[in-house]
Length: 436
Image 1 (cartoon, rainbow, N blue to C red):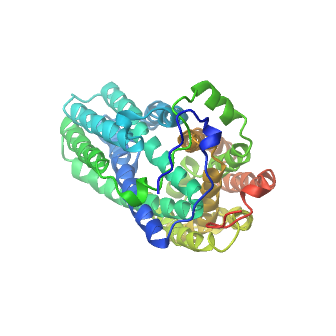
Image 2 (spheres, rainbow, N blue to C red):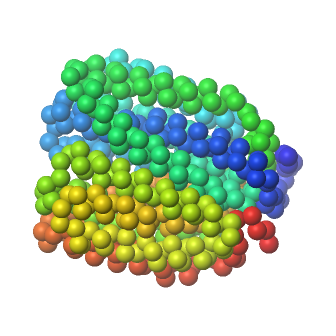
């Protein structure tokens, strides 16, 4: 069913009440979105399948020092810090009259062409940096379409919890696979010259993004006939921005998301702790991350079940209570084997919370600005995680112990509990599928 607002109506007038879909329709929508999420996770220049081999290329082929690799990653991520701008463009532009499919078709194709172009460009530090930045810019248009479409469907059909659970599961699978496949791909590229290694890597990226562009040509009715237009053709970008700024529900949602992803010490200090103190190898560090990522999946699935039975408020509170001591098991680990085992409960403890926080963000989106809001969350993730890593590294260097990082992470996580009190009660009073 499609409901189109009249061109003369303002955005607020064409917003409609949520409509619950049949279980068959929901399964088809989730499958469609899941395939898209998996493709984008593999095709992202900042994702594991591409990103991990690039880090090895920088280290092993271009012989960069650790701080130089860190500098490369900091600069190449600049478009990610501005991801909200791409979301806003998604919300106000309609390429080819196809909306989100237009973005996937246009920029999926452009990304594929860019991958091919840079595959045959002589490699250096500068050309690789430019390649990753330009590819990330193009990719973010596709990502914003997927983010916006996912949030719109979740909101319009009172299924943000199920969408959150499915999104996280589908995203975790390629993350886990990329940690393994990315390392394996790096190994295959090890015996190649720099130019040939980049050529192979980027041609793989081109094939994936070409598949995304082809995927955009498919228009399943169960998905797009159930997306209702929430604004007229006369919308004004400045007024939209003002509406976003005045929309209170996004503030506590973003605050909780900020605290959850700040996690000072969960990246570089943890790697140094495992490798320098517990003497883990590079492969074992990769294994730890893969186990950690995979261990979220069972609790994501549990969240998908619980979200239809319990109000989001209950899941937010109890998910956060479980997540606050997430990193505490590392205080009692004294071997690499113990750390690999501990990665399982550490991952499990974060699944309910992550599902609830993404659910909350989608419920918090102002109508017609879902892409902006979801990409704002993405921007926030990259900014705060980088600064959290810097603070954690400073604490680790200053105190010479990872224990202080665990204490800092736990203290930051504990702040999420009072932050939940700021969330509008009506927003989280219902379970998925309940319409008040």
